[in-house]
Length: 375
Image 1 (tube, helix red, strand yellow):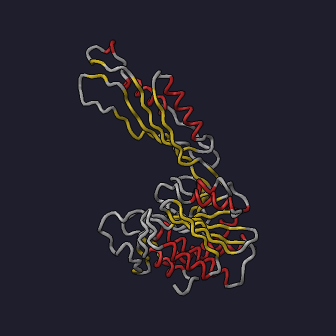
Image 2 (cartoon, rainbow, N blue to C red):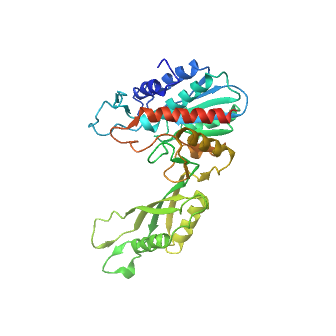
Image 3 (tube, rainbow, N blue to C red):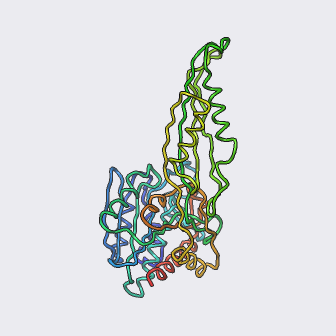
């Protein structure tokens, strides 16, 4: 790891750390050492059992932040071609858990910074927000670090998250937003009774079926300028009734809605509540929103990222808001944010891997972003 302008050495050192969430495995110490070599002031921030860091070079604006995570998902099956924490390079490909999600991108951004610093101390500031809680509950990671950053006047002008956004080839997609996600649990209450005497009972299963049918009868919406239509999916229906001759006292269902910027978790919860109320007098509804939708609309900040991608790869990226959630949903509450990283084809899979040349190309893109943003 002597040459930080090449991402390979740091990526291997990070992958060698067994940092299956919530464990750190020494990964943040490895990263902190590299950043301190480049002149960053590193602040270790621990919340609960989660280790995080905020590191900054410079004190003036403009302020560009790179956000990511060193925690990884479990290895899974034992049929890896190489040791998942061995960081093996074979035929020009780096293997290991976290190679593309997202230790490779962290190493690439450090390399981009190191390349930029060869031309002298940059104008403005560069910072890193790195958590060990992205693959876990996401309670003691980015959320808490952002609160600390706000309290200490460290909020950036723009944040770039290094998630593996590219579906097929490096440069083909930038995430400028994400859909929101809300989970709900429904329990409808009836009156228990004998199936032979239904007039003496009130079947909650029938009421639940009608309520669910009403919720799924039509699309939630038709989409918006930057988002596809919201998606409501029933994830469970359960009664737990082992008797064939008993109408149960209650029936339950669960659903998830991935929603666009026409809605909020609260507005969708009220819509679901009103719909159920048309079919049941007695019910409980629990709702949990893991993230609201957000979008950083095309403009000067997104253009800097797009331009750096085109300059380095010749690929014109698609601006997209699909997929699941990421820590960008928290960052969007504080500053404009976009996501761009490696090809994600093998993330969370056995033999997770990234071509070394692709990782080096990503470092060149990041260097271009830094140079343009701090120009």
